[in-house]
Length: 421
Image (cartoon, rainbow, N blue to C red; front, top):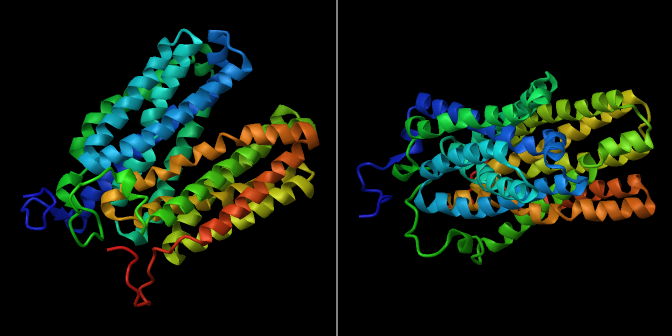
């Protein structure tokens, strides 16, 4: 008899798992997400030290991010399907252990090819965080809470960026930057086996809200995403995520250069202005998590429309540091409306495809990789401000695509059947 059969005595519903155990599992996963954020951002924060130690050019140093992003794309696709086929808890153990091990191996890199290989393999495991780790806790809670949980997850990631920046700024990273790699690798390596202690076994549990057992496994989960009844939403989500990544890179990737070369601000002032983008993003993550649970995933598209407009205002109407700080905070607040995507992706597809579907988040990197090339060419020809205006258009186009995707939050006052059984 199949493991997921309704009559199997060991199969339970997520609704039947004690709340205390579900919250303990979520807290554990937040630790794992914290160190994911730490490991991911070492590619940017430690870039000067890595470049100096290996004697790299600027282009070579920047390509380490490309290698990590490519690894994340491959890892999301491969490990998302592995999780749907063999269990998220089992896969999560290898994901956490994998990014810990390959993060630590960064201390041993001695050449440019080794750096690319190490960053690709590190990215392979980091790319599975969205489709595996986030899908795990989405399965443990009702849809009315998933947006807020995703906001807490985003907060954990943001906290890791702050912690890494603080550790780097205290002088520890300047004295021995490899210490920061060890600091991000040893804790998750010790945490990895505890996934079997704190996280419920999804192989013996139906996700929250699933009314039936999954169908027998007959084909790759990736193939199922392109079934006639699912292909439209799959492609729309891919386009939405790609436009988001493109728009983000077109603005955030150039904003410090814009403030230095166009506005002629000194580094200290640039740092203060950009810091407010982060403040806005932190506050926005919590707001949009609540908003998407209360009013729906699709209505959160308003954040992209206002975010796109804020880019236009930032580049054309804001001139003083105070104005730019406020404008950056508004931009950061609005574009974190994307926090609604984690629960949305988990709800738009059948539960047995949840991890594979959530890997769509990383597919968008295929589009975003063109952003530096396109915006760089336009900047050379027409100026940096003109290139960055592409961000406004891409965010607004993303908002339009967002509105074409079905809603999944059913208000209690509406007698409406769910989109998927």
